[in-house]
Image (cartoon, rainbow, N blue to C red; front, top):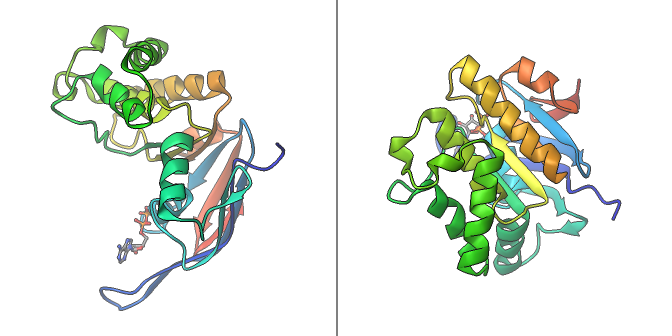
Length: 227
Ligand code: ADP
């Protein structure tokens, strides 16, 4: 119960393709995100934030080190187990919303729940309640193209929360929005995270947003340090 929701220990990642031939992106990165904690991940572009988030979210594997979610070491587990933990336990938000363009806001939040075995009525009711909690209940039937950038990102947050994850991973979630919208959308995200007691690791360039989280980790030269 006291295990951190996410723990990375000695994580290394080397990309071998391309010029200059080998990029040692992570060189022994360690971090722990405790229950209910919201942690900022700050790093210059190219430092390896996305790589770290993909490894933490079981979308990629480390070359060395361990990834534990709620105390379960997942580096050596089967793809099937990793997929099950990712689907049911981890929510992702990216800089660009990546919503499915041919589906409404509601359907974009319903579909991951159906994939996770939820009945449709329960999935729709959860989707409506999530949309309402970020202030866009009236956009349920809109397709992404008919929504503003801020609204699209709010839907992306709801989709990330759809399966009641333990951990939210976000990669520059407001990086594509103007400063005023970014601020409001970030507040909506934080309110949702705080209400659900979720743990989160949120990459941002924005030091003002980072300062509003519980802790700030910096990624440089393949290592993480705490501010
Ligand atoms: P950030 O998210 O901090 O901008 P990334 O994790 O995307 O950084 O990338 C870190 C470094 O690793 C960059 O130099 C990038 O070019 C390199 N990189 C990322 N993905 C790959 C890949 N699939 N193959 C080769 N190099 C990669």
